[in-house]
Length: 331
Image 1 (tube, one colour):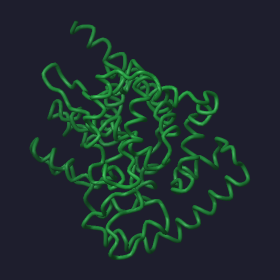
Image 2 (cartoon, rainbow, N blue to C red):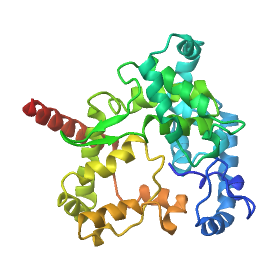
Image 3 (tube, one colour):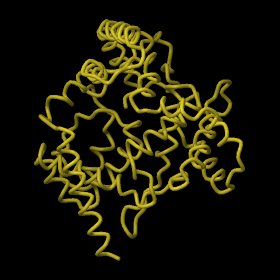
Image 4 (cartoon, rainbow, N blue to C red):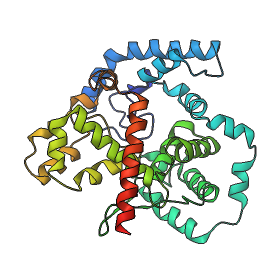
């Protein structure tokens, strides 16, 4: 998810303004971004007007080809919370259980759950002024409430912190559930809506991503690997030379839903060693291509060619069975 690039006039601030509309400090390469936005702002204004008209004509947000086309071009910031709530089914669940979120906050809380969540508070978007405890209208307390409520709501998941990679290696997930909840809070500015969006994401849209065995996460990592072999065989062959690096790199992409990862145009095929590969992924947010989200989104739906949900579902089933069989053999 890219921050700010699709939001219209407010994304272009005065030269002296170092904080973007989401509370993040602008990067050193802000000037090229501002130049791009000066040209792109007319497109964003037109897009915002079209969304406003669509929602005025059909306030219930029907899922149809028009909405699909609009979503692919980007949802304006002012409409994002409403669209996310409707498209995910979160709004329906919120309305069917009035008072449920508040009841979760009022119940007796597990001490370990509280302590674990509290430990991650300072790690969540540390460069964002909205999450600094000294901020007047800080979101840190609200973020804590959302994570605490979800931990009680979905006790199978609780609050997930560690992703097992191998028998001897673990990756701390200090950029996992807290970052997802934090981003939802930035967009919605509403605890209850963020909670129900979390429920939609973790419970229905991405099942088993945060369960103890994380089978859904492992499956989608393998699916991506299979797609890379098909769509970009040279990259697939390169990654195959470094066992384990694929899981190490892409697990973070999936676990935080690309929230802190921007589009990439990097010549990864130049890599000649494991450090080279790691450096390529480290520089994933650098380069002019990361600034133009419109061009990036166009490439997403053209360059890889046809990729239907039926194909993805078939690959998921195949990879899921392979993982289960491998894990069964290790027991």
